[in-house]
Every structure is written in structure tokens, then in C-alpha cells.
Image (cartoon, rainbow, N blue to C red; front, side):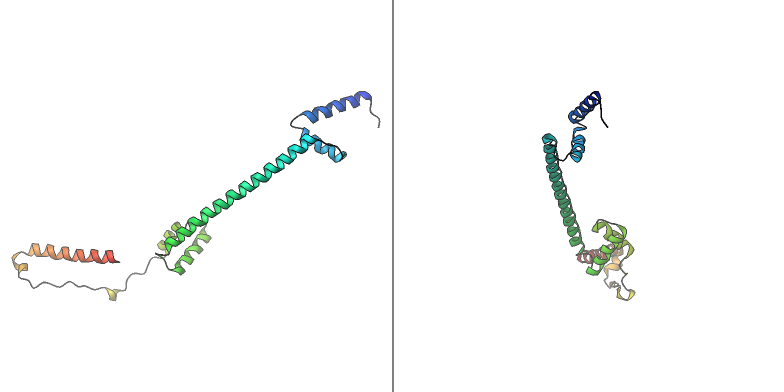
Length: 167
């Protein structure tokens, strides 16, 4: 199909406008190279190489950021896990980790609170409790019973507090 000189001139003008327009020049160069692979567009090729380097740099930066974030999270989790070692047995820590996975919990501390709430320690057996109070035989009980009662009460409270602090 033969085109008139005017049509060819219009097509040429359109191609020139597309080649010079910033939004269409890259697409125009790619389409033209598909039809005529030997065509050379140095500015577009240079932009493509520059964009490829920028993309590569951004990919490396993103990868570094992800690695840094992963390392920070791992350090935080290792620290939290080490803090649990003093309060929980190893098999309980394993159960806490399973709880974290099952419920999507990202913190050992939060999971430990839930685990402790759901698995309270067993109360001390009744046979191990002792009543160690003895009635005094002192004659001060007869002369000033209020003072002796207070002194005895404070002594027992002090003993309970010492036991609590040593536990």
C-alpha cells in the first residue's frame, strides 16, 4: 500500500513528536527497535542502564534493611527468651513458644503472661503448712496484755516478711 507524500510527512512529524516527548520517547524507542533491531537510541539506552543501576541499588538497600530489621527482631526475641529462663523451666519455655506460634504473638513477654495466666502454679499441699505460734508463759501477759500482743504480732509479721524476701 503506497502512502502519499503528505501522509508520510504527517507520520514522520508524529514519530518525531513521539520521539521527543518525555512520556513517550522510551516506549517509542522500544517499539521501533522491535521493528528495526539495528536502530540506536543512545539517550534512551543510557536512561535504561541508569534505571537498571538505580533498581539494583534500591534492591540491595531494601535487602539490607530487611536483614537489619530481622537481626534486630532476633536480638530482641533472644533477650526476651533469656529473661524467661530465670522464671520458667525449659519445657515451659517450649510451651510458650508454641503458644506464640499458635496465636501469632510476637513477644515472649506477652506470651509468658498469657501462659502464666492459663497455667497457674499448683498451690502448696495442705500437709506442708505449719502453725508455729506458741502461747507465751511470761508473766508480762498478765500485767500488760496489749503490749505483749502487739510485740508478738510484730514478731510474727517480721518472720513472715523475712520468709517472703528469701523466697
